[in-house]
Amino acid sequence: MALFSQPVYINLPSTDTERIREFWTSMGADIDEDFSDENSVCVQLTESTFAMYLSPGFYTDFIGDREIADCLTTNSVLLQLTAPDRGAVDALVRAAVEAGGSEVPLPDELQEDMTATGVHSRQVVDPDGHQWEFMAA
Image (cartoon, rainbow, N blue to C red):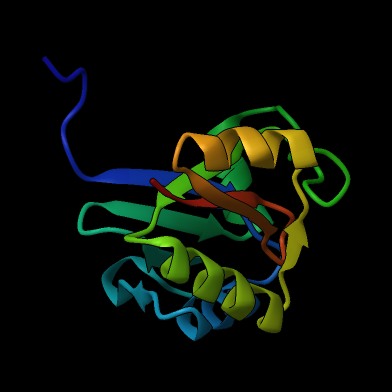
């Protein structure tokens, strides 16, 4: 039995929601304008999974007295998305890098282990420093 129901919203701090909008739309993602405004952009990742990038002022409304981590210098989460095939993974990474993201190279041994099990995985960091894994098996 599932613990939660759909849809899933992943909330992330963003220093520039317009830049994030351009980053994801250049990779082919849709934006849910019903949940986007001057303080947020809602990126549709799957039919029922969304990334909500929130401006710092709006994001802090949800986290109490805790500070927002600087994701450009630290990593607190690795978000994995499954793509249909190897070619789609590679195309997403190319588009992400062209849109201002950066690829995170995986160690050769890890890459070899994943390839041996039929997994193709590549990692990118978006312009706000959030790390995404695009994977196909």
